[in-house]
Length: 345
Ligand code: ATP
Image 1 (tube, rainbow, N blue to C red):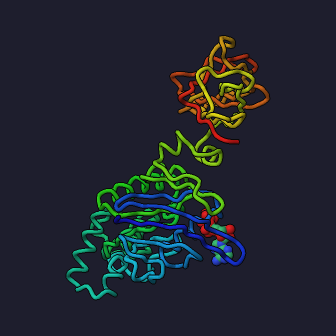
Image 2: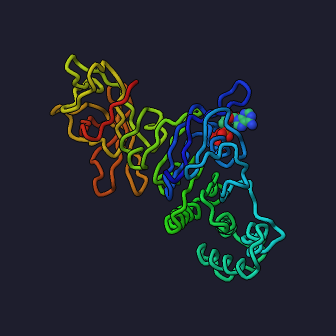
Image 3: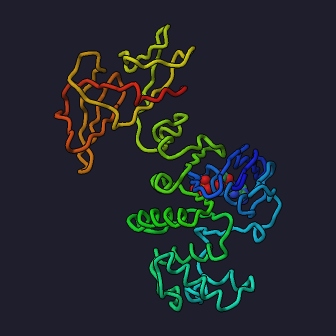
């Protein structure tokens, strides 16, 4: 298969295991985001793919070839790391052409490629500018162009947008994704920003404690999280303890949920329900009973906090479906079984 394959990759630093037995397939032309909290092993995994660290065990294959022990400069990679700054004394064009020059590409071809890349990153005519005169977003684009100059097989980026302000970061996420799609280049990005991962990736790989907790398309990660860590890490969710009767029927916050059944043999577990899937109704009629404790109007959405069975449940609504409730009011919580994810506790 063309693309990148990680086979049982483990990395130990002395007695500490930073990456544990990771298996991952990144098909050619796809965009993968490694996502997880600080210290989960994302950068360590990326450094092994880049050849900057050697795995303690396991193998890395790129387009069918075993590259586990191949040095970085022979891996055909384009890299944008947060700490890998542009050369400040060179112009934009000289920065982009750097790897072409050291590969002996002729002056004319260098210029042609630089112009092509500048057009691609929406900075045509910038070749002669000193990099010191660029904005943060422009520098990041130049760093991307520099990494792509050699048309690498694999494009690796570690927190590439984290130094940019929120608005620019969002715009650059869309740009980076569009660029990757137009080039069809296999790309891996390390990020701790879930919005960034959801915006750009074909596959989001959620890591924790050196292990992959789930690798799936963004919507699946959000709608069908594999465990409570993923459910809680991605977006907001309500994690509610449940128990079953002898037939698998699920009771949440003291009330049976009609139509919701746990897998065979499950006595108890946790239900993940996204706030937008919590529907507030009049009390009674089989709904879970609760009391409104707080309402937060964020403009674009309204969050209603409800205390039910000793737990806090959050419901999110759009302004045009604003629930007509106030603090202290008794309400019913109605859950659609299709929106509930049954997880092990
Ligand atoms: P962040 O988002 O903070 O960069 P990360 O998910 O990228 O975190 P890593 O940098 O991969 O995490 O680190 C994973 C774990 O391995 C951390 O506990 C870190 O302290 C440890 N670690 C990383 N590099 C080394 C090293 N060279 N020697 C010892 N421990 C290391």
